[in-house]
Image (cartoon, rainbow, N blue to C red; front, top):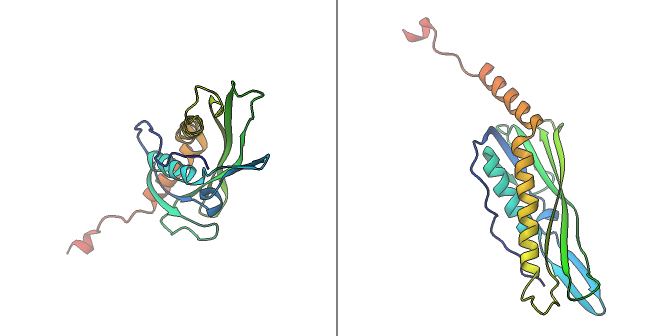
Length: 194
């Protein structure tokens, strides 16, 4: 089993988008792993927890308020404006022809932002990869960890950039703010002041 980092990558500070988002972290995502059986050996890369930690970190950096939903069926609370759903599409590792080469781990993460009625607002697929010396290389000490660190950094920096700058998300957030402004309680009338 490979050693996977369980702390979020560093992200730049930005002005968050003023919106309450429920982040749906499914068991499927949080328990995701890459497995390979080769010649009697069994390799496992348990990456799910790191994916969920970083998905939460990105979401909390991009939006003003975040609520976590840890299953596929729970409905968001009424104060939630949208639901953000990350899902792992694929994770692969190449096997170099020789032990003196580099190995690459790559992953594709889908992000979907739905409104409260479960209608899609925005969808994106992000591909990330990390490369390091193949673990059998004489200069390699633990190249699986730098590979995974590189993968997580690439995948979630790209996710952060995409989510924080997506025009559809910006426009939806603006419509949420307009709706909130129209629905706000009005001040006291003269009769109420007496």
